Image (cartoon, rainbow, N blue to C red; front, side, top):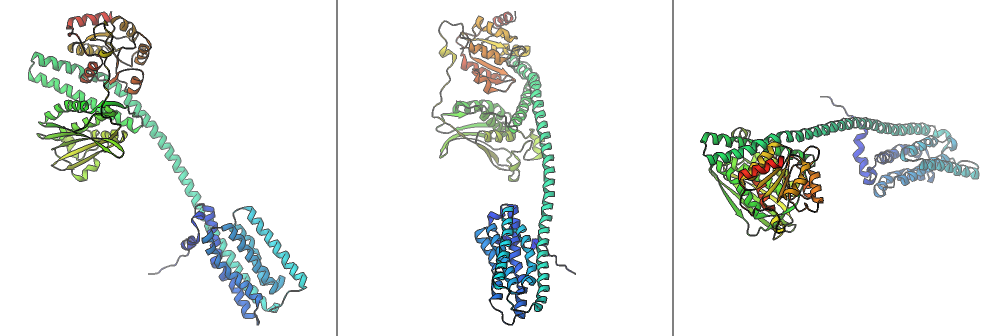
Length: 618
């Protein structure tokens, strides 16, 4: 098998770069000039010494006229080491050029004068100045050095009247040929090396042009992706409104029908149908909420709303919500609490959402088993930490599949979606919410042995939590009865649902479908609370809320925002006591009403409420 040896400048780069300090490598132009400098000083003396050797052979009595230029040429091999130690490329280059000018003029003076074979090397000096030095100042300095050297050369000649003759001029003809050949080789070597640098720079320029073209395409793709993301966000926002409005009616009316059916004792099949309708509506609402939340987090628009809350109350609420979910598959829910919990400060709604996702997953993948929710509070060097764990005795997760759990729309096993349902959004959203709050969620699981998901969050925890003052504590004596609730919403279905929910719970609802009536009705009925929508024609809920809080007579009325607009920060900043998102979660709404206006009188009758509703619309 034949072989071919290919020589290229790149083969000596490791040797050259060993002598180049890191400071010179940082800038590409200086790096290339340093390489040329080293090529000249590592290989140039070999060509220069061909002349000194030749002169040594033909000179019968070699003396200082030969040893001085030989020593000066040998000194070239010291420059790479000086460069490595000092990094002073420009200074060493000027000294090197001065050394070469000295060798050339010394050789000319002692061996042939103006006919000396050393003269041919004088043309090399401007070339080296161009290659070594990167600015016009040092290059002009080299021209000055050449002029000064020639002037000194002429002064010595004028002072002596002639040149020394160590060797007859005719004997130097052979040296002249050697000198011309060596100078030509040296110039060719430097020119070829410089050409390779130019070629590499041209290739680099082409690469940069390709990169620029790629960058333009990436920028265009990024803009298209951003436009698509904006269109997706707009679509989700619009679809959220369009889907939540009918869901509000589906969930609300199905809950009312379920309660009536249980009271009236309807047949089991009809009751199951109502349960399925209500469950399906809530499931669809959960999917819509998860998709919207993921979209907000990925767009960087999800905000945290920190408030103080009692950990024991949160645990009770989670247990109350999760117990029916666990009971569907015959599971037992066990709650374990740490010795000291007290209060916490953080975004309780997002913590509740993350915890319910874990409890819902455990209830879905466990049958006739146990689900343990454990909440502890730990003190560490970095502050207080809240740890909420959900352990189950369910199907478990294989170790190799655990890495896929927190990916969007991904599940540990492909068959679980068909058997247990789900979209793979819950855990992904839980992890993103926890990380948004400065914590994380971890998993420990073994196939067939169950799983344990743990939320760990930092919080500004306090030993006690300040209870929010209720309307009962601040309302003066002699004010009207405390169970009148004014509802302002332009959707007739919402008004009907709110009337039925409030009447059933003993409140006296007053309904208004025109936000402009809100102020007058508030003065007339002096409600214990006002439930207010945001998106209404002619006057939105924010404007109504601002007007109420600016009125000295009405500023003390607690306002609960109940709307599709998920802007809790704005609602609370304008003075609302709570901000709830439709569809109506009856339990949360009633808990909020109990907090801001606990009832102090017997429940009103259904008929009296209807009369009041009719008068409100009149």
